[in-house]
Image (cartoon, rainbow, N blue to C red):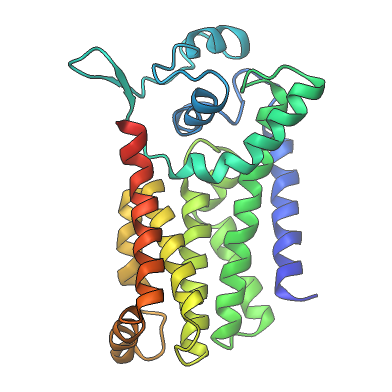
Length: 271
């Protein structure tokens, strides 16, 4: 088995453990609840209800949850309008699974954005990012020439002996697992760029996009840029090599467009 296979196996085991502990069919244990309802609500507000005021949430709470389940994440402005105060990066990551759920719900169920098919696909999406986070860690350790046994032991300790296990198995309302996937993905592609002697600018662009998504998912993820420097082999070369790449017009334009598009997402939604 290669490291991608091990990542799939570990994610599946965690998925089974999660379902043995919590049920998305229980109104009190739904994965889209608390903070995740705030992050996720961008999607039904845009794609189903066309409601920037989030007026649908009161009815959704009565239909699928318990009184008080809806967290107060809306900020009322002086003009009487409401803004979702959370950052929308997580909603972008939820989007593929939301769209699949919505298609299935329109065919077979209740397309209200919060019925059981949305809850199940949301949960599955959560573990997809758990898989990516684990896979990128294993691949990073492989690039650092850490043996398979030590890599698996390291990942097992990380997953089972830290708060990460709680966010995986018990609480899908936060974005720590998504941050783990995005930051480790950015690090993996930076290391690949370094491995190929800084010749493949696409790898650098992918890293920039992943870091940008990480920042609009959780702004403090910006500090991960500093942590990445601890993993590169030639720290004194990384900045000059980045400067060499970005002076190439095509690369500079691609990076600028990526950054502008990512930053414009929260700005546009809040506007």
